[in-house]
Length: 453
Ligand SMILES: Nc1nc2c(ncn2[C@@H]2O[C@H](COP(=O)(O)OP(=O)(O)OP(=O)(O)O)[C@@H](O)[C@H]2O)c(=O)[nH]1
Ligand SMILES: [Mg+2]
Image (tube, rainbow, N blue to C red; front, side, top):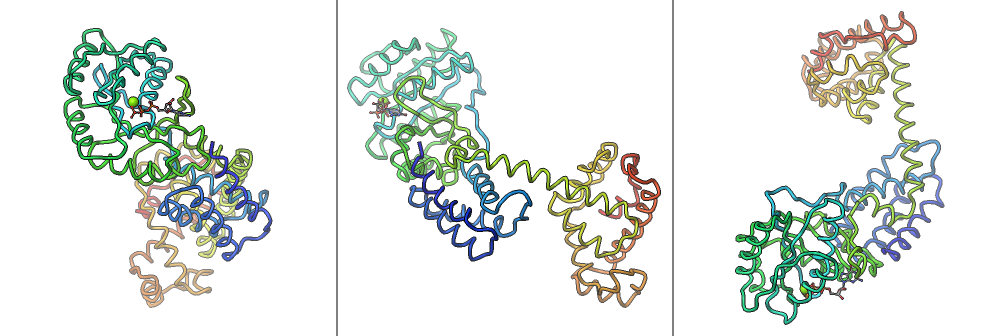
């Protein structure tokens, strides 16, 4: 599965692994290789483009961690973006309805609908202890209904008895009655395929959707058809409310283009992968596990994760140290604002500080305006060096200049000065308390928080 994609991405990574310092030119060169790997693996053009656009600023703006190489860092960034385009989180099948829950399976001819219908019933029985009834609405291909019946018999799954000469809408009504009477949990409707999308099939599916009102409409698409699978999904989505995708023949797909593009292009989550012809060869689609398989570098990803957790701790320690120093200029403050922005703003950083659980609630409740950090940064940048070191020199005319220079107003400048003053006082108190002063702090002065709104 996805072997050729893995090979191609690995060779792009080997470029990053050879370099020790990352500049923009080298990042571009490496990203060009990754983009090429994606395109050659039949990933849609727009998805490959977005992928690179999302990854690039992270690579360039990255904080180089001490204990990992640029190459390892990039593996982690690419991994995160892969998970992102694959759909971030695993999405469960939706069974939220009064039983019998109705699931409609749609797709082109030969995509694997009938096989998947039976696999899904087996899966729901195993993992949700739900009993399904299978119903074939394929009245066009001779023996299609029989095919499902045989699959059902072979795997001990109930099927609706076949009655020759009925139309799909008649069959579905009969199925709902029968399943309600016998107390089935789920009905899975298998439908007829066509070699390509045509109006007649779409009309029929629309009618079935209106009539059956399924909880899930699942498109079964052949992964080997690459971008065609994605285009087909887009077309189906125009007529029926597709809720999920199952990609089949993943077992034979070296490229993975359909899997990688599907969610980003159609907005529909992939919920399962067909991994073979057997009844049990249906796998739940976990974006992170798939990304791991594609990269084959799970160890590097977890290494970088651990190191970056450490980095945050380093930042927190530094911040706590600054807090405790007591003397504190606007240059220190500027540094802090920048750090805070990186670790999730003021509430983010305050809530990470050790021992402040007591004041966390207070912070949460005070609705801090996070955009204030950007404004404060602009104000400090408009100060001269002298003003930053010694805010006392900031008189009325300087305030006016600073406000103009930062695109804010005098009241914002006043607020910042007031805040600096309060912070200095707070810090003096803490530094008198020595180490652990923060731990003992059980309230942030309310006037301080009010000033941040
Ligand atoms: N290798 C592999 N083969 C599969 C998979 N899913 C289905 N198949 C095979 O694909 C062929 C077609 O499967 P069907 O389930 O009959 O496809 P269908 O969409 O119902 O076809 P129509 O009803 O004719 O439209 C069968 O030989 C299946 O065994 C899969 O995930 N991997
Ligand atoms: Mg079929």
